[in-house]
Structures are given as C-alpha cells and as structure tokens.
Image (tube, rainbow, N blue to C red):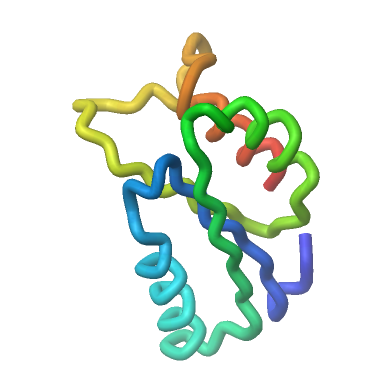
Amino acid sequence: MADQSNQRGYLFNCDHLYNLDVVETFFLEMEETHGLNNISTEKLYFGVNRMAEICEATIPQLQMDFAVFVLHANESRLSINEDDAGIGYAKVYRALLQAT
C-alpha cells in the first residue's frame, strides 16, 4: 500500500448507471475538509458484457490503495459477499477485495 499522503483509488460502475463524478467530487472535498493529501482517482465504467474481463484481467493489473464499486440497484439485497454468490457483482466485489 502507498504512503498515506499519496493514495490511488479506482471508482467502478457497471453500465453508466451512476455518475462517478459525484464520487470523485466527494474525495476532493474530503481532501480539502480533512487535510488529506494527494488522493487520486480514476473512473472505470464497464458493461455487463465486459464483467469477466474486468474481474479476471483488468482489476488484478491495477495498482490501487482503495476501490469504490458504485451500484445503482433496485434489488432488496445484494449478496456480493456471501460464499455461494459467484456471479455478477459478487465477482467484481471479490476481485476488488483481493486487489486491495
């Protein structure tokens, strides 16, 4: 992990269902409000058809200190961290968990 004064993060969203500029702005405000230094973020949007590629090839190659996976979901619950949830968002969650 990088020095606390120089953090690199990635913001993820599937199918452009949420504007990641809002999340990026939040981190910029956190920098100013709490005296955090040098937080850099990169936004990564991907389609459902690229989910496997993102999980298996892209995420493992990224150098990051943190990740934010923004969901815009209507489900009553998301089973992304259950042992038997091996599809969809759960695969992205696990890839990010391993990479960070």
